[in-house]
Length: 433
Image 1 (spheres, rainbow, N blue to C red):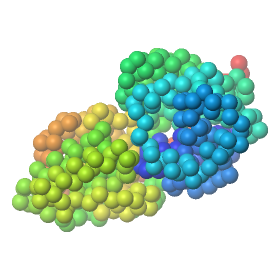
Image 2 (cartoon, rainbow, N blue to C red):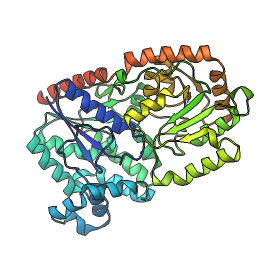
Image 3 (cartoon, rainbow, N blue to C red):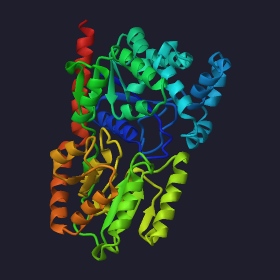
Image 4 (cartoon, helix red, strand yellow):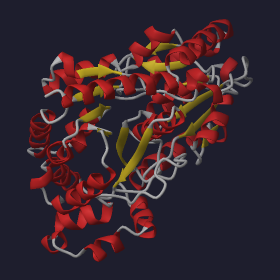
């Protein structure tokens, strides 16, 4: 079976769970002898990519997508002009500008991309179709439902099934301004009919998207994301002073300010006065002011020297970061679909304290490797952090139980095997029509 995995690049400026998941899928399928290639969209991926995109051009280059959205002239430019705008140096420059477009511009581009062959980037779609016809895959997997505008023409022109991974698209779509929000959701609902199967990263998120997209149960599958658990040696069973870790994009929606406020509170407890906070996961230019305000808040409360904002977040840096932690906490405001950072933490023997929303209750039920608290409440979170950090026996129990469960449930080999079965079934059903 020949598989194409279509993955948007994030610019590698922050911890992108979808990007890490897709790279892991591609690497593991290759390791198992499957013919698979990852096709990058918008920006070239660089972080931990290995040979997954070797020799691959970037389709729907971010600069071309923007120019074709804004100016009709660029929808008719010759190929050599488009290739110039896809030069790696220019795209890497564009990656640093991620987050500088307005919400309305982002919404308009999203809707245009969802229109596919009828959108302003139709020229880019044709380039992808031309390449796919030469490569001749048996199945194509989209990284998320925001790419659904590609599915119809791929299905029609290549006569192959298209499947789609589902992870956190609802938060993005809901953040768009009206009327673009409802327009985008309606386009997604329409395009959903053009895909053979959907693969959610959790039972929680499968339920969310089944309801919002009216997807029949037989077309919805659940496959937990996977990691190379063998690379994650267990963290020290005792860390003194205790260290709380945050691993995600350093932004408001991830609740970093809630964790900072909770950290300031627990430092007032004499037994935790030496506790430390380590923060990793990257940022965009839009996050700079927010991070600066948090650093100022920590300094004002005398905690600045005990809080680190770390830059690297490639896989090896993440593993080393996890080895230093006593507890992981990412206080997501709205909850999220996957919780890959929790899977990484558990594999390293680091328990978690998470808000009682999104996938967190599901992961706690599956692994026993953490505790929950009432969302968006720094005082409640501080109480939970204090309870865990001052009870080393309970923390150690959660660490051991969570690590055992992570190795059993969240391995890359298991994830790739389950996906391969879904792909094979999709191809068989599609050819049988």
